[in-house]
Image (cartoon, rainbow, N blue to C red; front, side):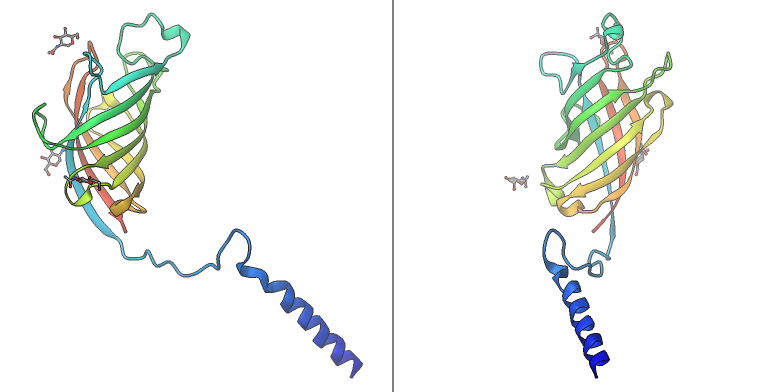
Length: 189
Ligand SMILES: *[C@@H]1O[C@H](CO)[C@@H](O)[C@H](O)[C@H]1NC(C)=O
Ligand SMILES: *[C@@H]1O[C@H](CO)[C@@H](O)[C@H](O)[C@H]1NC(C)=O
Ligand SMILES: *[C@@H]1O[C@H](CO)[C@@H](O)[C@H](O)[C@H]1NC(C)=O
């Protein structure tokens, strides 16, 4: 009888110890409701303009050794961008969004231009107005056709992942102005 009571007592103490699962900083772990995923493809042109009185990409830092370098984005240059995204490659083409963030010139190899991008691509018109996707990726510019990793998204692109295929549509190597064609494939909720 006494042994039984001790076991019952132990059982109560143990069950009390496991009760506060819902307090504090976490919820109960539940099955994933974001199971249904869809695919959306996007096509647009990014205008990265370094020249003139209204640049969309501005230098915020570079290493001392690159101070005298005349190329637009030598190794170590950090650029802040607010680049318009347009439907077509012409400067008069309709703006559908903007790409905001940073890129860093990350290739120390002479004669190459390699960037790492930390950029949020947001849309300001149509079905995806207010939604954005996020790129954190290498962009080996001198390789011609290239691919970026999409690591997340907001709004209609919540939980996005995917990739972007890029080609340079226009590049002025003297001042760094560029128009880049993007074909993006997004898997999202
Ligand atoms: C996009 O969304 C913003 C904020 O909700 C709104 O002010 C704007 O009118 C929308 N633009 C278009 C073209 O739908
Ligand atoms: C993007 O897709 C269009 C047609 O869907 C194609 O003409 C173009 O070459 C592609 N561009 C890139 C950069 O993949
Ligand atoms: C490229 O940029 C340089 C320097 O700003 C300018 O003089 C030249 O006209 C540009 N080339 C083209 C094709 O726009």
